[in-house]
Image 1 (cartoon, rainbow, N blue to C red):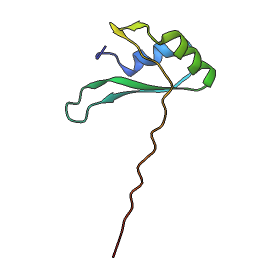
Image 2 (image 1 turned 180 degrees about the horizontal axis):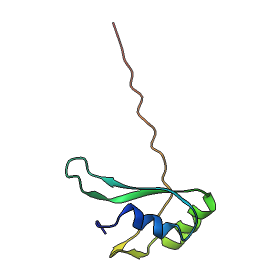
Image 3 (image 1 turned 30 degrees about the horizontal axis):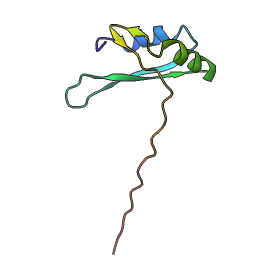
Length: 82
């Protein structure tokens, strides 16, 4: 739900291991949640358990999609000077 707090996410994921961080992504213009978040777990095995147990389940009236985040490569900026 768009009313879910970072604490709610920590509590949900803590069933599977130690949660290092939970960050709900906020739209810069509207200042409202975008509808997704990132949760960082201490152990890979805890993250794997959370993914397998929570993906596709209902939480706060919304279907969760839980997967491993893949870092996007940062664009390189080439500065050309004459």
